[in-house]
Every structure is written in structure tokens, then in C-alpha cells.
Amino acid sequence: MSALVDYEDSDDDSLDQIEERASAVHAVSSEQNREVVSCEDSEAAPSPTGFTPERTALEYHGNTLDRTSPSLHPHPQPQSCTDWERQYCGSGDTAAPLSSPEAQGRMAPRQALPCIPQSSSEASNPAKRQLTAPPGVRPYIPKRQRLAASVQTVDPEHTAEQVEQGNQTRESHILSNVSARLKPYLTENPSAAGIPRRPLMSLGGHQGPVNTVQWCPVPHLSHLLLSASMDKTFKVWDGAESGRCLRVYTCHSGAVRDACWTPCGRRLLTGSFDNKAVITDVETGQQAVKLDNQFKVMCVALHPSSPEVFLCGGYSSAVKAWDSRSCKVVKVYKAGIQQTLDILFLRGGADLITSSDCVSRDSADRTLIAWDYQTTAKVSNQIYHERYTCPSLALHPLEESFVAQTNGNYVAVFSSQQPYRMNKRRRFEGHKVEGYAVQCDFSLDGTILASGSSTGCAHFYDYHNARMLHSVQAHSRPCLSVAQHPVLPATAATCDWTGEIKVWH
Image (cartoon, rainbow, N blue to C red):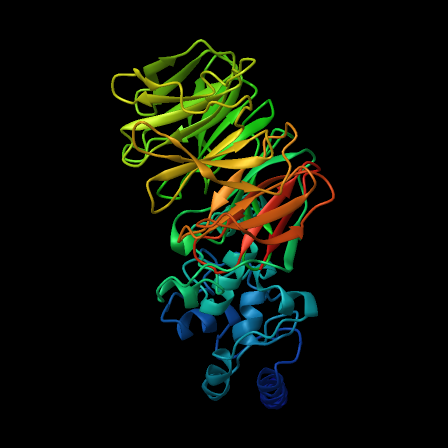
């Protein structure tokens, strides 16, 4: 009996111990549930229901594998939380176990909350956050974070290339922008030409004498001003508003003696002392054509009806005609001279006039020579009978006449039809040339003739009566060229021997 009593007592003791253990387990489960709800860090405790953090996460995402199996889960104890687990299970260092289905129900809504970064650096740089997930599960990354990460992980070299391309794109808008100052005049009928009297802006940048300035002939691009200098460069400026240099072209190794626009306004023709004649793209600055004349080029001229053909003259007894498409000489105009100073196509391009430095004691034989363009034959070489050379020529925009600047300190007028006689009753006097290559220019309506001067003045004449209308002291050194604007009334550009360019209005 004693043995039986002892056995029963032992059973009673076991029951008491079981009850104590059950109450302890219930207390532990309640404490764990509170820790799961508050997402606090705690150590995992054995769960009587058999739930583990790994299994709970997999069941929540639709994977019902029993991760408690030793073959599938070699680490029965919970491991440290990863960023992904913090996102779905809390922010503690260890995973919080679930001890009951009620606790699972309380945790499920909180698992969908987005992860809050633990440091300011992670919050400011989403690309640094690397979310890891258990095998078979891909965590969700918001679209904004993906875009931010892709932007911040761009190769710096590619970024630099994109910036450079952007700068080139901004620089290449030379021909696409229309000056706001020109717009009111583009839709109106051309008004009468006026006389500029006040300086509008001064353009500095050339390191040598500026030989010529020309406005772009295309009306909506006529705010562009071309300049050619002895410093081996030619430039394009915004001569209507900002006065900014839009592009510098350095394709010559010698002084740039002459330059002009093509009729489309997209290319520039230049001649230089490096024996080269170059056609350059205005936008890109690339050389479309580069030809060797084997002599120093003093003047260039485009054919009015065939712009692909141009003439070059200079330190040679011949003038060459080039075809820019084949890059070959198509015509040669030979004369017994040493130097060609200027070339002028007459209206239609059937004839042309060349000016040379050939003079005799009593008359300027072969100073001005008229040529037939097609046959290259001399039409006349007895046009000008005075002992002065003519450094520049200009064609009247409307009438059948042209003018020649002479070293006799006057501008002579000639008929542009055969026999090209000079008008002895009309000449434009009052300025000085003194051996400088001073150029002259007509206004768009042909009523005003402008000329530079070796004294630095710009002179404006009435073309019909040869009376001087106005004279302005433009520069302190010789003024080599005056270009009147083709659209803006009473606007002109001047350049001088020191490299200064001014715009007047």
C-alpha cells in the first residue's frame, strides 16, 4: 500500500507540476504576444503551437512549407532580423515568435507597413538600402525608390557626356533663334533707310585688324554678324541684342582676308593668307570644303545664281573658279597683273568685274577688268582711266550700276552694262583711304551709300546727289568696313584696324 500511495503521490506531484508548467507557458505566450504587437526586440521562446518566425512569414506570403523540419531549416533557433524582416516583422534585432493564431491575426496587418529607415543616410539615399529576402520570396520595392536608385547609380562618365551634349545643343541654336528685335520688322514692308547716329554696342574679342563685317542676308537671321580678322579667326556675333560672340571659327592658319555668307545663311566662305579657301558650317563649325589655291587669297565671291561655284583672287595673275561639289577648278581668268584686290559679280552672274593693283604713269590700265563668266574672255580692261587703285567694289541693289572705292579718296560710279562707263559727274568725296582696304556698302533700298575712312570715321552719302548726309567718329583707328543692316532701319556695323567692332543705330 505504501508503494501504491507513493505512486499516487508521485502522480499528484506530476499533475501539480504540469499545471504549474501550463500556467508558466500561458504567461510566456501572453508576454510574447505583447512583444509582437509592439514590435520590440526579444529572444525567441519555444511555442507550444509550433509556429516559428520563418514559417509564419512563409505562410503569410502563400508558402506553406514546414520550415521547422530539420531537413529544410538547419537553424531551429531564430536568427537576427534582416532589413526585409524588419519591414514585415518589426524593427528588433531578433524575430519575434508567434505563439497563437490570435497573435498571427494581430501581426498580419502590421506586416504590410513599409519599412522605416533606421538612419538619416538611408532615408536620404534609397539606393543604399539593399533589401534581402528568404529564398523564393521577392520583396516589393516602391517605384519611387527604384527610379531614385536608377538616377543615383548613373555612370559619372555618361553623365559628363550628357552634359557636354547638352552644352553643344545649346550652342548649336545659332540658326534656330530669331531675335526679338527683328520680329516686328519681319512682317512689315521695308521702311526707308535711316542714318545711324548713336552707338548701340561694342564687340571686342579680335586680337588683330578686322577686315570686313557682314550681316546675314536671310531676313530672320539678319541679327547674325560675321567678322573676319587678321588674327586667323572669323566669328559670328549676335549684333542685334546681346552682342555676344556665338561661335569662333579657327580653321585657318593665316590671316583671314575676306569672308561672306552663302545665300541660305547656313555656311560661310572665307579666304586666307594660308592659301586656303574654306566653306564652314555655321552651326557645327565643321569644314565642308577646304581648297588650296597655291596663292594668298585676298578676295572671294559666290556666283549669284549658282552658289556652289565661287571665285578666289589674291597674290596671283589669275582668278580661279571652284566648284564646291567636285572640289575642282572649273574656270581660270588670266590677266597680266600681280594681285587681285576684289571681285564683283554683276546682276545675273553673266559678267564679273575684278580690281587689280596694276597702274601706269598716266592711266590705270587693267585696274578694273570686265570678264565673261562662261567663256573667261575679257570684255573690257579700259573701264577706269585714272591712276588710282580700287581696293573694293559694291553693286547697287536696284539700279544697273556699281561703285569702286579708290585710293584717290573718293568713290566712283560705273554703269553695270556694257561698255561699263564711269559717271564723271558724280563721285562721293570727303573721306580718306590712304592705302587701306576701305570698303563701302549700300542700304537695302539703295538710297544711302556708306563708307569707312582711314581717319576712323563712318560716312553716309545720298546716292542720287552724292551729298554727304552724316559722318560719325566711329573709331580712333582706320575704319575698314561699314555694313548697313538689311532689315533694321538706321542700323549699321563698323570695324577698325585694332580689332574693335561697333553697332550703331
